[in-house]
Length: 127
Image (cartoon, rainbow, N blue to C red; front, side, top):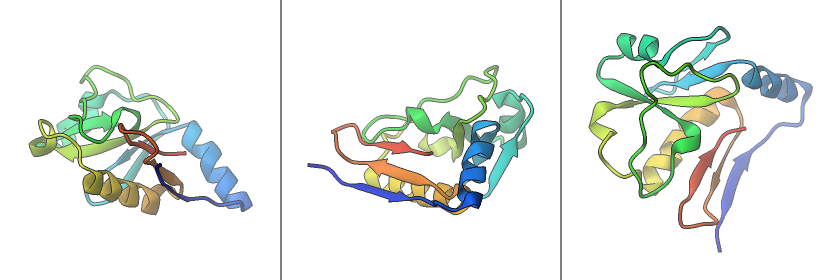
């Protein structure tokens, strides 16, 4: 049996933030800072400003697997949350403590998150 931790808001501002997330791509930096991109941008533009890091999609992250990189020429998708991670983490399987740490960083900047621990391939779900 798994567990799920979440943080939600029912206020009007929470709903507005949710709608705003769907119309922009967000990048969560190592320090927890969040960048929002309302205009199309390719991953290589983010990486060029952070050369010792790689970009990954929150949807591709699961415990026990290496986090796949977003290709340099891929355009960030509106409504998606991306993480900028150090290159040193690119070849290591993601652990539960690391996933939880990323969820905490994302929640401080985005306001809503959940960690689904109900399956063997636990995932970070940002809403």
